[in-house]
Image (cartoon, rainbow, N blue to C red; front, side, top):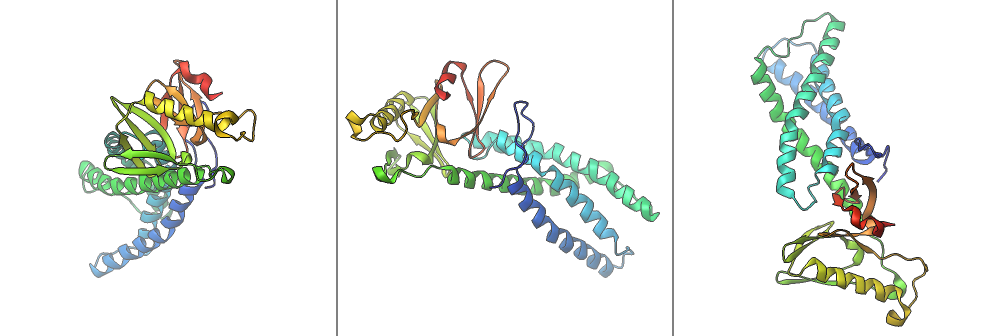
Length: 296
């Protein structure tokens, strides 16, 4: 995935060219179909409308939506659907669709008024009533917002899969056995994004979903530490890591979280001295300053 401007320490929205370009390209035929459909339907209904008017409506609306898409991408990064709190993320995104719609209308209406003024035509967007019109637009914008969220989530999921490091062929297909419910999964270490304590259980997160495991985070911490030791200690594994400065794959960032180092894409220090990590799937995790040295 091609990435454009990245967000810095200020936390400003990151412009992700891949999903944005997809949205922009798909928007072009959608505008053409909607505009021609509007024109045909109005002519069938006997309404008088200039040929260019439906294109003004659709182009101004679509242009504003495409320009706002990176903001939705930032929101998906901040509250990912692939994260551990899916119901909360869905609720937040549903709420964000309201200011999204208001911003859409707020930018679209002046653009249409300007286009109509050039032609010397009057334009009244709220002729049907302010609240009725806003509700009507929000209904459509809610669907558009959901589509944008789906696009950015799909790209994040794919990026996480692509970012998973390939296993070392010299050591064979190293896998970690995970018992989840009545199933036994065999995961490559690179497939695990992070683990999070959930009482006497652990939630293991991968790009494909989450699994609730009957174990404690302390147990998993010991298990992963033993794996890293066996991987780097020739007395245990019979092999020497290719780099003498090799670091463990899994590091604790909080008393309730262990993260796969290879999936960390960004680290940002917060005002409290703690830090936030952005993972390859767009999920954001909070880490404690006590464990920051483990990332070094």
